[in-house]
Amino acid sequence: MILTTGGAGFIGSNFVLDWCALTDEPVINLDKLTYAGNLENLASLRDNPRHIFVQGDIGDVDLVRRLLQEHQPRAVVNFAAESHVDRSIHGPGEFIQTNIVGTFHLLEAVREYWSGLPDDRKAAFRFLHVSTDEVYGSLGKDDPAFRETNRYEPNSPYSASKAASDHLVRAYHHTYGLPVLTTNCSNNYGPYHFPEKLIPLCIHNALAGKPLPIYGDGQQIRDWLYVKDHCSAIRRVLERGQLGEVYNVGGWNEKANLDVVKTLCAILDELSPRADGQSYATQITFVTDRPGHDRRYAIDATRLERELGWKPAETFETGIRKTVQWYLDNQEWVQHVTSGSYRAWVGQQYGAA
Ligand code: NAD
Ligand code: DAU
Image (cartoon, rainbow, N blue to C red; front, top):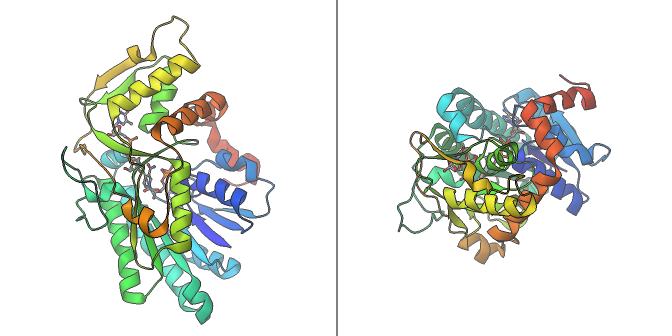
């Protein structure tokens, strides 16, 4: 048994779906179901006895304590977080609460549980913390990609809150010996990505005939990784990672935002052409830049590749095509998310609030 947190969100739900498809090991999935949590992502697991969903907060120590005692997991994988940079600029409070205070409470409950395990299970236990490349700050055009040894220089309330959580996780290893692992990954994309983030937002807006908003000059660079490759990296680190260590995860796919959006438009022009024969690229609109916008992220994933033998399966070209096709095939999912009706799913399916 493993326990995931935030497993109804974008990356967490992909992880849980893959986990249930690839292993026989049960997973207990604790998620608060904020606006970003969507049980429709996990609809295919509804009758699967190996997936146990629990609605709750990682900051609820009593709940986490109870779940750990009851289910005796051999590992915790912590995805739960507030994840959207723009929201952190408009309202940082929730980011501090979940990403910092929540992670602290989770660590406390896990430490208590882990301390009471018999020696063999104590040695085998893992706490894997899922983090981001944004903790390293912004790179100049010619700087080398982020290594695990880069100094932390977070620039947004989001990345600062993630950086704080990474430090707490590190401290719990150093001080208490908790067997932790941390992954710092670049921008993910793929199925079940909430349409507030660049790629799903632009696919949705393109098909809806709306503007495709490009912040500033659109020359900000991100490294893009297909979400299933992030999930395989997490599984690999969980299996073989060295305790207390950090692994950068990335796709070797640095792209300027404007190029990403032009690529989306070209694929949509081919797969779902506009009725008027014009390109979706005509909908590109430059808008006011994000305050404090980081210019460039790039990940050096050499350590994960060399020490743990991980490699991404998708290139950007194959992954982005799959992603556009997924959105075209799952318009109902998008419609439920954009209309807000996905939030009724919990009540319908689980009888919860
Ligand atoms: P997301 O916003 O899609 O999902 C977050 C999930 O966490 C949601 O299901 C939400 O309901 C849940 N949640 C939020 N607060 C909670 C709380 N207090 N208790 C329990 N559950 C809570 O995020 P995502 O994009 O899937 O990111 C998952 C993790 O990966 C985050 O920690 C994020 O920092 C990290 N990460 C994301 C990316 C990316 O590109 N999306 C890249 C690197 C790292
Ligand atoms: O780097 C990893 C991070 O990637 C994760 O830690 C975050 O959780 C995740 O949200 C993502 O952060 P970004 O800020 O990079 O993702 P977002 O999709 O919001 O933006 C990607 C880039 O596109 C960024 O440079 C801002 C820009 N952008 C974004 C939106 C939503 C636009 O130009 N227009 C937009 O409308």
